Image (cartoon, rainbow, N blue to C red):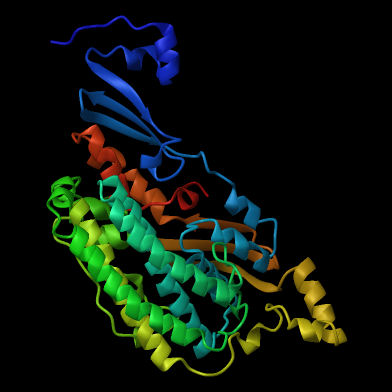
Length: 412
């Protein structure tokens, strides 16, 4: 039997709940976020709790909405590359590649082998960087602060490598339609190889700190399991889907950028709980190192951009300053954009958070008529009301950390 409590209108307004929501016997409405470290960004969770038990959880998004898709319809194809950095801002290099391949599919461009290898290399380094951050904050969510120190130290090493390659640490904007901005600098690949050697040792150290830690296991094992059927029904992708027992990976199932040339395994879970999602990302980083080493060993020579992309790819600056033809080409590409054919294309890549897709509708010319983005984080958030029901309030940060989403990609 429930009892009705008297609640002042001031209390109701402070909670951000309606009178009908607030007066529910012993149940209470709690707002977690949007300014809260446990929500991994500007996410608001409207929780209905009975004591410490969550009876209802509604995610409220939109606090980081920037209108990326509409912005794309008002600028040239190359001008939109920096905006893809701001989707999953923990893996901007991978976002750049996914978008560029979608436009290249529309333009029917053949990308040279060296450019494809560079793209695979930066995508896998981005996967390691993204998982390192996710793993570090996941450790903090469960009370293991030391893990954060290890993972962020390694991530800083990666950012130094990114800076040497692209000129920026965070928002890299490295990829271009038809290639990449510049070739690999001399001596960079040995530095990546050296990073991989040291990183695997640190990863083993993190493994020993967490994987068999009794407190971590108690806080994650059996929590918020997602069955194979439920994961497929919600459209979950990436590590969250593989943790539920579905061996789906676009790098294997629909290979792009030459991924079919590399030998790597796809880790698959059995239970689909928070612990499985952690284990999958741990193994994914090891597999990424495996791919990176193969790319370095087989790095082909040749051009870092497609020869057929001369009317899309900006000409070298030294030629722009000395030759009339390149100056005119540069002016036309900057002001009007490349002349791409009319048509519709869709491409999705296996990004660190899951399948990132770009749909482009072109009516011809240098600006897309419509552009739509399928963000994996948005899909991952959609299952939160289902898996949070019946858990404890203190388990919410652990569940959110296990899903490893990013709000920039969700809100767009």
